[in-house]
Image (cartoon, rainbow, N blue to C red; front, side, top):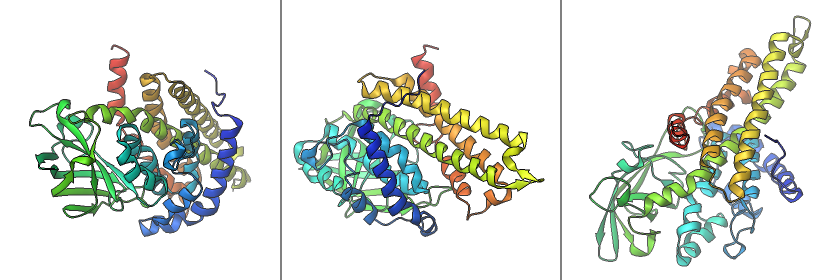
Length: 380
């Protein structure tokens, strides 16, 4: 397996530009935003001004006419914000909430939602998970009843990133009484009467607003039906591959930074008359960390190449997601160990990185679900 990146010189120029923007505009505020449990909405406007909210979207909607590799660069570099919550909020907008509108929306829906989203004027969220239906999307219970001119929605979603700030929520609903996948539809629900959000407190990702959203007799016009009626399961599955690949890329980016910073710390910190890296026990830990970074990057880039080539790399993307999320958490834990008591302190980046990494094996499809998918793909 080759590590040769699938990126061209154009993509690397974008990387340099994105990295500079993040280091100037986002990273210096990471600690404050974590303490505030919020990052300002103006972050979206600043990113839009750099063209970073529409990298893979067509120019006619305000995008950059790029490809998924341009977006992949952003996914990796967002780790440099130093705040998993900030990266998650941005990522949810560009990689989870807006893609279904781009792929399945009518022209009118794209003009009304995608265009202002790319401009950073309207922030989106995706509402699928419910208190009683996480990975089992067929069990969701939020209902949309047919009425004249549209639907009336009742139900609850939870663990929704951008769930407090979002002006629109791309929401999965049941549109038939029968169970199973066939009766799921998607509605674009505007923030308004009957839509209430309750912010949740989390182990990590403190700067992101994760919420439970309740819908009480919310009227949604017919024109806000996204895709086909009862065809929502296809819509759910369509973006899972990219969402999971984006998570793998983000983990690889975070692992690289953590390794570099920890190795530098070990070179500079002295113990028993020599640098930490001069002790075999620490040197071997760092060697294992470097190996993990390299392995995860190889697997992720292989899946990325296949994805952009138009394959259906279900096996490779699932493996990348499964491998990188657990590996990232374990690497952050090792980095914290090498930092010793300092690593457990809030003022050190590694304390936050260890907490932020823990969501990876849960979000976007848990490790258990990834293994079930692989079991089927491998005909086990």
